[in-house]
Image (cartoon, rainbow, N blue to C red):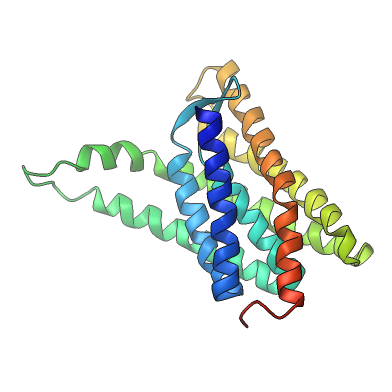
Length: 228
């Protein structure tokens, strides 16, 4: 059943991004970026079995943050893509600080949520540091790489090349950096390596599957169907 849920979640993410872009334009992608980063850093705490291997949740929604920067790079320019990265970086810092300060409050006897919040967010600083470092390095690489390939293969028919050539290397950087900072020492070595490899492969799969969405976003923008 996990594979079915994964496919449904993938479609929901793709649909949400296209809807946000169609309704709000590039502002919708700026909105999506902190959603993706924050949700991914919560979902990643859940370990699941997927396609017969151990994986963490959150790979889909996090991988879509690369799709948003690629759409921005393709249709609006490198600086707009960098702005989205800065928004995601800022939002994750704020969320981590706010939630850890919230845990300092002494709960009332009628409280039922403190222990669950504590379970999630007491490990969040380590996850957040891992995500911040990996996110910043991989996203900035993705923007530079996308621009590099776009200047050499500017035709629309080569969107698949610049999308995959930039994102798949960036995802590798992200997966290795994040896994070592976030999970090294928390799992047995074999499980840790399996998580790191599957994390990259699942993000790679999302990157491959999101290419048609980039073509669609390009088409909508070229036809003037995206709000300014």
